[in-house]
Length: 200
Image 1 (cartoon, one colour):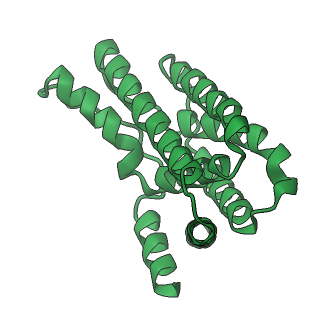
Image 2 (cartoon, helix red, strand yellow; image 1 turned 90 degrees about the vertical axis):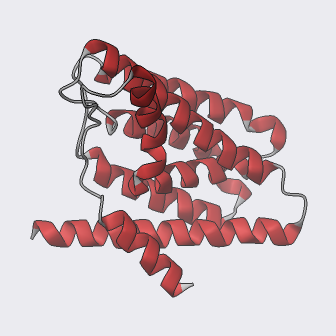
């Protein structure tokens, strides 16, 4: 377990600095779209945040999971749209790691008392992930394609984590989700600690 946490943390640390999406001028529109679609999955800090958010939503009762999912999608879309006009927040990388640590801890805890926190956490996650996906030095069309791809990739990822968790029928599988949550929290804390140590 410790080796897995260390490996995830080190891989995340390698890309922990936020680099805006870029689209070279010599590739096609469909390739630009796919670059945006894959961006959330190729950025470990985003993967940890999306996993924590999705797993946390997936621990809710089935009838209550739709609202936080919709909240995430709405805030994620809104934050991404603001980046079309030059908005963005590179510092949200550290905030994403804090978010991933918190969501991972809540998933590992698995307490029903924490369910009231899921909707605000979903909203915060959508905002941070969106603002951390700003594009740079691209044309308007490329910007739109990258943003659309990124939105679809991120929204599908969080939804997939949530749905897969909701569909787990056995108690031992739920325990496995809590273990993954603890790994997410530990990896995020490790990445954040490495990042902060570089600033000294």
